[in-house]
Amino acid sequence: MVAPDLRGHGRSDHVGKGGSYNLLDFLGDIDGIISKVTDQPFTLVGHSLGSVISAIFTSIRPQLVKHLVLVETVLPPESNMDETSSQLATHLDYLTQPPEHPRVCHRGSRRRSLTSSNTGPVSWLCPATGQTH
Image (cartoon, rainbow, N blue to C red; front, side, top):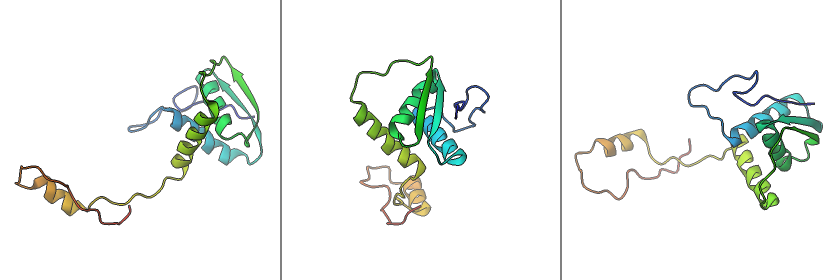
C-alpha cells in the first residue's frame, strides 16, 4: 500500500526556489516514488487533493495500480476521460524522458545580438546551429 504525501503537504518537504506545485509535478512525484518502492501492482491511497492526483495517476498508469482508495475526494468533471488520460500520460512521459532540443544559438552570437548598437528591427537573434544541449 502506498499513501504518499504530496510535495508541500503532510510530512513532505516544501519545494525550494524554482520548484512548483502543479499537477504534472505531483504525478511525476508519485511515478518516481512507485518506481523506487515496487515493481508490482499496488494499492494507492489518496486523500483530498491527493485523491484527485491518485485517480488521475491511476487513469494514466492503470497497469501499476491494483486497488485505488480515495478519501474525501471530489467528483471528476464531465469530459472525455480517455482523451484526458492520454494527454496526461504524454505529458508525464515528457517529464520522465524529455527529448533533446536543438540549441538556438551560441553565447557569443547571443551576446553580440544583445549588445549590438543597431537598434533597428532584426529578423533573427541568432542562427540555429543544429547542436543540442
